[in-house]
Amino acid sequence: MTRHNLASLRAIYNQPFFDLIQQGRETYRAHWPENEVQLCTLMSIKTGGCSEDCAYCAQSAHYDTGLKTEALLPLPQILETAERARAHGSTRFCMGVAWKGVRENDARFASVLETIRAVSKLGMEVCVTLGQLTPEAARQLRAAGVTAYNHNLDTSPEFYPNIVTTHTFEDRLNTIRAVQQSGMSVCCGGIIGMGESELDRLKMLEVLCSFDPAPESVPINCLMPMPGTPLAEQPPVDIFQLVRLVATTRIALPKARVRLSAGRTRLTREGQALCFFAGANSIFYGDKLLTASNPGADSDRALLEELGLEVSRPELPTATF
Ligand code: SAM
Ligand code: DTB
Ligand code: SF4
Image (cartoon, rainbow, N blue to C red; front, side, top):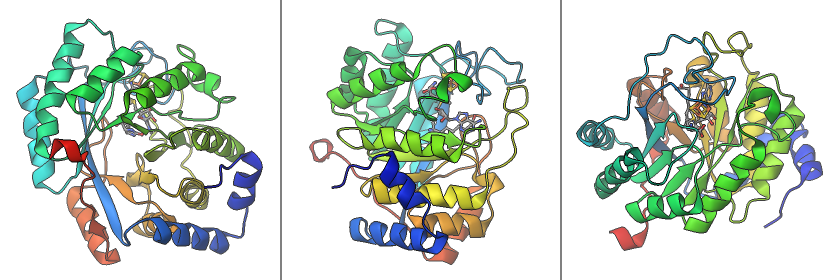
């Protein structure tokens, strides 16, 4: 497989629009069962009060966002939500916490591990996003049954300090290395619409292309401007720029799940259809993301049906079942 660099990514991205989406579609068809979309449900299991100053995030304690903070939720409540997600057709369950990172010997981490052991018995892919990890914490998560760990680069190395000052881009890479060593899959992507340039987006993609192994999934979030955060007034992302990035990601990382993530509430059905055509094959499904809203499950079901798209089966480690 070609390992893309910035020059090759720019050449792909800057093609005439229809050539680009056609190449995205062809790459998708060569690597994936046709017309299948993965449905993932997100649940915030510890909300707000985070020490980090990520400029996009409603959960940062640095900004007055009016969000109600919540301590780590108890296992039965999480399990019930996971069971409901499965009953509604989700094949991946992703739990998020507003932490800078995991402290290995903390009782709260022990509680998260216990929750993962229970949720992983439900037959869905299990993803968590808990912030920074040590290699030992990553090993314990893998042993508890996590299939994928979400830790986004969010933007280019150059633009990152404009968005976060309480940790570095290198910190993000260190956590991703710990995840890779543990054997969990890496779910890693970014946010567009934070004031970065299109080149910054391709620079982020260049870093994703350097991962070994390649990321299993790449969430592409459009900024949801959160009141009270420094990015509250950012204008929406241009749809053609989003579609171009989706297609370029599909072409550069053919085997990755490309997830059309936060911000779908501001996309039209036609815009989303173009993203699927260009190679997106996963969405967050259910009325809520972590703290922000998502299109309703009913309207998503209707959209998939109108486009003739089906729900993909979970990909589970064979040892588990
Ligand atoms: N605290 C952990 C961390 O930062 O890795 C996990 C949770 S954090 C909320 C997960 C990801 O959600 C972020 O990396 C970012 O890509 C995305 N995200 C958060 N707020 C967002 C927003 N307002 N709009 C779009 N994406 C957002
Ligand atoms: C990802 O890339 N997007 C999800 C998931 N990984 C954890 C989170 C989106 C959060 C959107 C804003 C919110 O709900 O607060
Ligand atoms: Fe905290 Fe994660 Fe939000 Fe940053 S993105 S403020 S680390 S919850």
